[in-house]
Length: 182
Image (cartoon, rainbow, N blue to C red; front, side):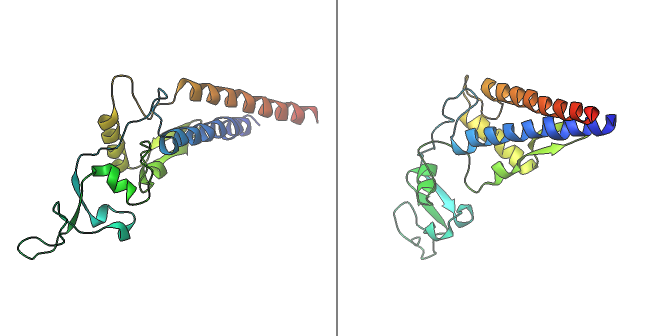
């Protein structure tokens, strides 16, 4: 009974609360574009750059053009990249992605790698891919200022998690009492 109760607590209490917390974190970061302090993560760069076709999610939006607007170099060789005068902001815009706020989601790879893993008596939350972990670190470095961090839980998110744990403990406690009363 004690082993079953311990497993039940991890499953019912910790896992349920952590799953809700992860969803809240993901929504804040990847949908709402908010940092841990509630501020906007940042703004997309408008510094001109060249993008290759492999960078595009929407391949049909890729048009190989140089900075002059021509499809070929003077030598006659075709351009293999696309010049974007408005930088990453334009890159997102021509693919139909939001540019109003930074939401760290282009393909969804980073969001999909931000996961939970249940262990014996714990639940781990984090990035499960080395490449995506490097991406996260790079994005945090790129958008970070003295008050701005992105991935840590906010105080409100921690409070919601704690309240969820308490609620689930009450449910499990009622089930245990009911089992002994029967």
